Image (cartoon, rainbow, N blue to C red; front, side, top):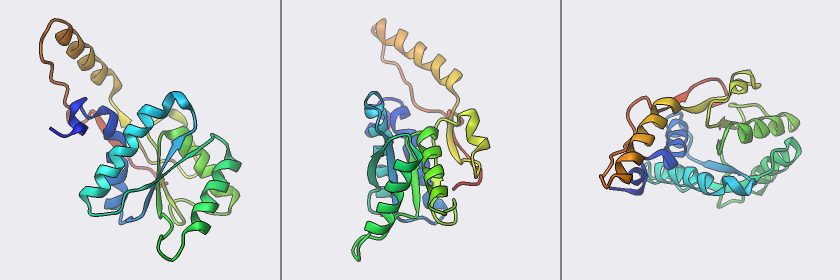
Length: 184
């Protein structure tokens, strides 16, 4: 069993789905942008590893991983440096997986500051499907989780483990999925 399934796939699934979606859209050079919030580091790293696994499975180089503050100016600077800093050996990413929708919204705001648009100049996909994602400019493509059902199964698995059992917490179809909008 690979590590993507060791914890039911939850920690890696969002990043894997983000990258798979972008790869299906024809993107071959991805970036993964994490939040600079320290308390989100472990989950963010898991999501980035899921994207790395998807890229490896598709025979692509791993995504370039970076961190930004939730600030449009910081996101614009990071986007500009990534586009300008790509040398002859390294092409600039054509798509970004954002750790969550807030990071994706910062990236979209930074792109607007640079006069760039998604998905024409850079495709962007978030995660968590917050209510504001559908009102972004452009509306944000994201990964959503069926939190209620997944939470109930997680609680049941925890109770089974506490009773000495060997719980099974694999992701089921529909637990996590891409909500396709305009940005990617």
